[in-house]
Length: 107
Image 1 (cartoon, rainbow, N blue to C red):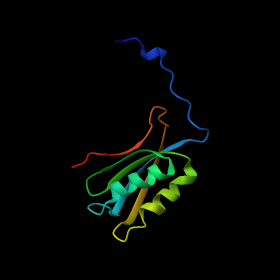
Image 2: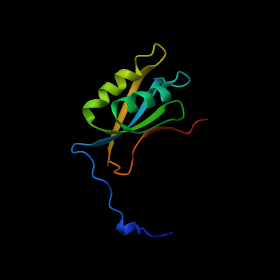
Image 3: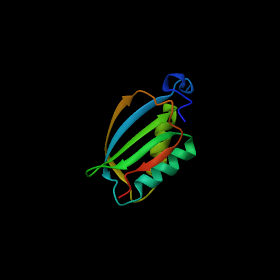
Image 4: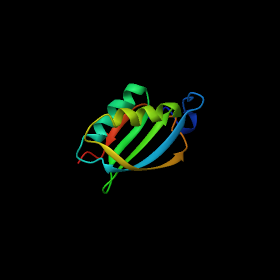
């Protein structure tokens, strides 16, 4: 069933201006629905990536139009329970194969 060799597969073209960023987020972000709120907000904005719990923080990797990233955080913070106190970001290379936004490491 190896009818498609890796070398024959071309990655899909991404929209111009697509950016990927990884955020390390601290504050009141665990046990308050942060990951599922992030998933809902990202999907509603057409962004892809993932979010997962880390040791005392949350890691969120998001890809799409960077103008929507601020809207993403605004939607996440609409909850009375979520409180972001620290946000660190790092730019990454976009992933042309990614198609959705998901919650990783559900535990």
